[in-house]
Length: 362
Image (cartoon, rainbow, N blue to C red; front, side):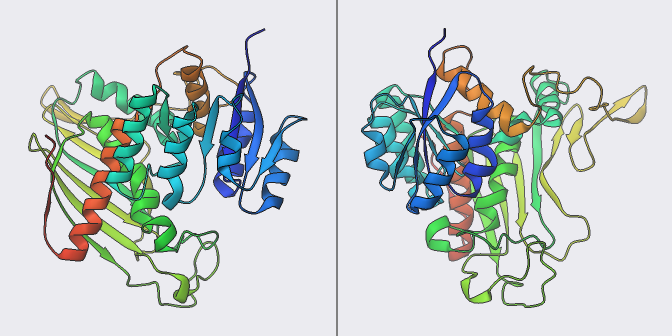
């Protein structure tokens, strides 16, 4: 019988319960043996639902890390604590899956990456949208060179009125920002991954807090508390890459827009283009005519993975566990994710200073 991968979860809140633990529970090679949360009842509840019979609970993650039988730690805490918990876990001999974004700052993200290299332990970040069937199809198109050199792209994460009013989403100290660092990070990750371009040169950005003080908001999850809304409600960036390619990034939790879209992108190459604004569309010129191709993504389900679920988060976790077991290469690499954080931080910095931020990749 194959050895079980023993997992400890740090942070038993919404993302752990909604994404990590239920999907890990479905993987036969996995046992969730430890749960940590600063609220003891959360850890106990998670243990009862997802844990092994002898699973342990903690309120101090450092106590969990002392268990040498744990192979992997999933970090599902607010953004502020991603870096130091991840680094401590890596240095205690554990592989780490950390929720997105990688960290609040590029310096923190880089330290996480360096700890992974130093310890020889795997580190991945929870960008599960890469496993969406449409995105996998688009990646195959890009990697095959079918749209040519991508020189303009747009990353889109726009909500009309869908501000998360639970947890610490509105807390700048805990999270580092609002929609840009929360959902903009997914759109940017997808876009850079499609382009296979991780060398930004210059960033200009702006953030807005225009709707946060309003009441009677028609928000999807009920009215927010303006006094607790300490982050931006929308943010926009303009990124120039070293090779001259341009990426624009749009993100919002609350924006007066008629057609909200999330985790979408537009890619323009010198042979054609591809976007996910309306399902997935590939555009090109053939026989002197402009053509748009719309592949049928309903046919055959997920053609890129066979497993117990076609949920993006499950596939993401399945690939991650396979990487831990040495069966395949991990999908989301820390050196990619830290560039996403680098760009997000630069957008925030540009918004504060009103000046471009230049990035030295040497």
